[in-house]
Length: 239
Image 1 (cartoon, rainbow, N blue to C red):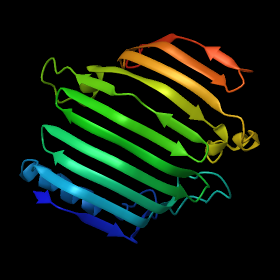
Image 2: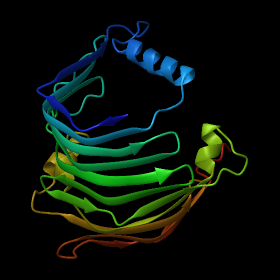
Image 3: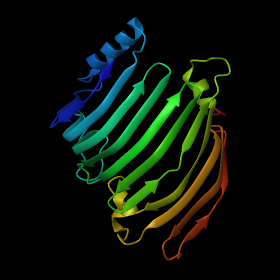
């Protein structure tokens, strides 16, 4: 399947669930896709351009009260969705996705000015390149992150697949303003707008033993500095 361009302008997608025991209003779509996957193999898909402008997406759990302020996972309203993407390849064995830009605003006040990245992967390897996340006072960029998947027993078990992931990557330059994320944690509203945190991060290993040889967090004037290489073990262990 090859498509030259898809344009989604001015859409308003409303997802909701009335009561806990009731089905949500988009379950029929999930069922349709699941049925299609069982009846046929995944087709080879190529979409040269996906343009999204002035979109709106909402999710409401109507039996839950709405919070007066801050992010509410039961009542999410995302406005001003804009995006430019290219799905170069999607098949059973591989994916090539170029997200040139995604931006939106959430009703809580959180604003994403830019999210961009490239994914190129197959059954054995996934590469995440040119990652960039920008909020009003935050900018994070990744160098390539590589994920290797070792199918030792050709398993389709999700837990075993995650156990066999090998990760390698770094964040060479990151600037965070905690104030940008006050919608998720209200005390951050008191964080000074002009006070940013810089950080560097490098990691390697797998999800059961992740080595972090570089973890630095500091302010611009160096009145706060943290240099804490570390390692995380037994993330996948049940004990």
